[in-house]
Length: 327
Image (cartoon, rainbow, N blue to C red):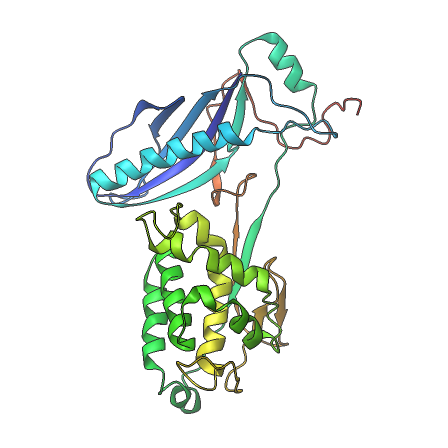
């Protein structure tokens, strides 16, 4: 049996990118050209396949559990190929998940029977959400930030960059605001946000901080890990909300104090990492929502479905109406 992982890769390049097949480690990777929206946007279906030593296990409900390690090998190979294309063509790239994003390729009738006698492949749909408030450019608010225009500059940089770039600018912003290394700000940030409805916890803030060195260093001294966009993507909207609150409501700028003032309160905000939202009645807002694939790895592209389905592929996800097995 083989595990098949599907992704959609979009390359923003004016030079032509060729399709092809290659092998990285134990993974076969195929790049198949898809529709092109314009001459600067080239879309490819990138498929990775790896042999499984045994059939995947089933959970107590009879759902097939995709083994993590082979799946991550496939994702590593996909990202390696996309990164090579991006580097050699000098272009940006996006990696998304279509529907379905995974399949099991049967090589024997017994493997097909094993898969059919299940409730489908176990997958959990996740997403993140956030809100964006329009901040009125009123004289009082403009005056309130006149002593912290360096912080405004860093937020402007954040809005101008990629998600990994935004993370780094938010880190610099918090360091500037509290005049301390980001790795030492967990207690201070928790205390500062304590009276707010945003629901920031020490554990959430620690997750932001844990990515500080992997996102900023690659000399393998302060950290043995290298983080990329997919590692920080889920935190960006909550960090943006926190940064705006600090910009307007921190009483003393660029010092270690956690004293608050009351200058600006958003009409709508998220109150947890799970995306719970509180809205002031009659408010206008922009709701930002993104769904991820069943493995919480790549954002899902909702209008992308696979048309050329091989007979040997099994790709039913969480089929509650499939034949149940004894537990």
